Amino acid sequence: MLYKGASLFETNREEEGIHLISDFIDNQLSSYETFEHAIAYFYASKWCELRGDKEGM
Image (cartoon, rainbow, N blue to C red):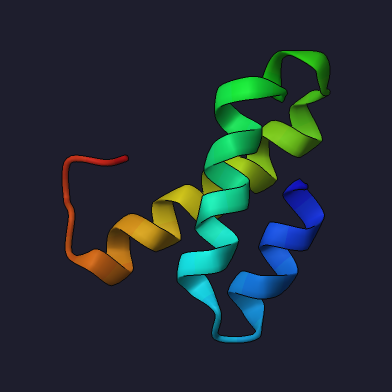
C-alpha cells in the first residue's frame, strides 16, 4: 500500500497516492520499521506542501 501510493505520487497522481499513504499511516504504520515511517511521512509532508498547508496533515 505504501509503495504503491508512493509510485502513484511520483507519477503525478498525487491524490490517489496520498489516499493509499494515509490509509497506511492510519492502519498499518505501527507494524513497520522506521524506514517505512520516513517514507510515509515524507509523502504526507509533500502533499501538505502541494496543498499549501503549513500546519501538516
